[in-house]
Length: 391
Image 1 (cartoon, rainbow, N blue to C red):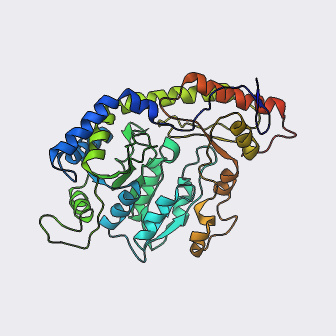
Image 2 (image 1 turned 180 degrees about the vertical axis):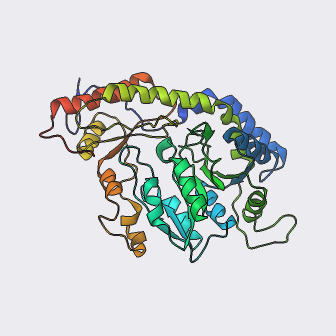
Image 3 (image 1 turned 90 degrees about the horizontal axis):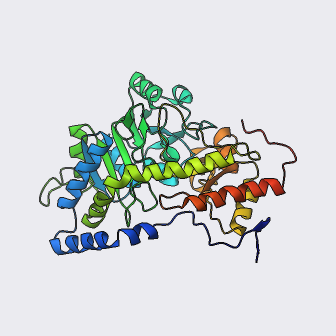
């Protein structure tokens, strides 16, 4: 028996989830529950030896010196900016083609985000636009390593050095990604990571880390995450409550040794998509630059028929997502920044065309193949009247 999709006919098979952690949990259930028991029996649940161990191990993995575990990726950015004394009156250059937390963290300091447009082929910050965006109030450049691929960091760092501004990397979606032989998070003054469950290195709850090579920033970040305290009940400066708990640290430390292998599995899934979708319809595939790696936190395509395709795939039992359907500069919550439709033309065009396909390490090759065949079927059965310009 056949199931009818929203826009076509699909075979009667189990749904393809966009993301799922249950297979990973079942495979590692005994070790995970043993870790939970160890932490609960230890008598220490917050900022203990498990957090310290994970901070050390993840910093070493990323090629940095110090890691400071915090309660979210948002707080990792926020505390990084606070540690650099960036606040009211300052401007932070970033992109609107990102998750809201990037900008929310900037605004939480009192600083103002200034947006530059992105590259149409990589979806990443167009670093050629940085010079024109720098003003006398610019204090920081905040590149977002979106979907798992690093921003072009060398020219970005050249601008930062010449204009004497700091760099904070948003690494939430790109843990382990490599740019010219170095992992992200090791280039700027601070690298900010998220361990939200869906991330390339995800926990079983929320968490984040601010990473730095600078001793002064390391010590200040540690104070800021814990009410400004260095010891006892005495604040050296105004601080915050942003602590990675022992349980999440233990689970993340357990998962860290498998990260490179999980990235390889993501790359294999991406290869199935790329090989099967090359030249199909008006699809534009993600471009991977030769001087960096792509972790494929997301595999995001472009098509002028995005909404039709998404509906069709939904009818085939295939989940997809749009990351992100509305650029931040056009959201009601950020109208006060003064941007209008047309301010960032590439960012705005991408928001109308991008579609993220199912992607996680336990996605089966057969499931990825089903996604490919469903997309090919959509374009076979509904040929384009005229191919849309994707430039």
